[in-house]
Image (cartoon, rainbow, N blue to C red):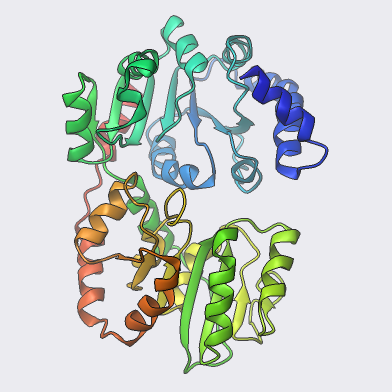
Length: 394
């Protein structure tokens, strides 16, 4: 861990994200101290979300906690992009970078914050932080956790990690299957919560006041959402070969270098969303964070990126608008994607070369039955947050 911290410092002059993480961690302590001192004797809940996606999952929890009781909130991130693109103007909130996971750094942070409870969203296993929390008898929780039966955590070298997870006050599992896997491995501290992203996705849809008008109304409109560099060439080839379609092209990272690279691959001239809210071109590059979830509303079909590597980004965001949605095959760690695929609400491309063919099939398909199925899924999905909120307020 110290070597990792040294490498981050070493490369920080050359890589913006490394620089943001290094300087952010180094400079944040005075602000943390002054904020917490101003909060006085208020109870503080520390919630850790690795990046922006995990923070979206945390929003329904935070929204209910704000209504139930007067807490103060520390929201920590490991990803600079999550930190940079999360706006927390409420004085009850403080956002920070998670310290380097050494005993000294985590102890220093806990001495400053003195949280009453700590919540981890999904797969945030920080050995020294969990150890410190246990020694200080500060209850900690996991939400929307899912481990596969063959997870590395169930292998003998990682038993110390597994022991710390078992010391969580409660692990709120993703679904019944997740709960059973943990139960079969000796966990006695689990409950089923579900996927909080469903609640947040419905909230986003209800709040959607965006107005987006394509220049050519009769063209099919394809969203290529949260795509990563390994998908750029495939997406460019699709766009270049389909002048009769309109495209919303949303890269996962929106730095200038990434946007320039995307533009260089395209034969078509493009509109940049940050400069043209009413685009003049039929290819729009979304160069902002947080807008994609709303702009899916104005498309007909969606491809969600990263499914050929770590796993797809949020497939619920296009589905809530009834869009036929496609992603890559790596969904074994994503129980919601597995469920949606099993119910024919999510299409899977096993190879990049299949994406274009699959999208053509989806564009030409009658969507009335599909829209009815997705609408029923969202309307019937249970909201199991009340038990978690009651526990955190106790």
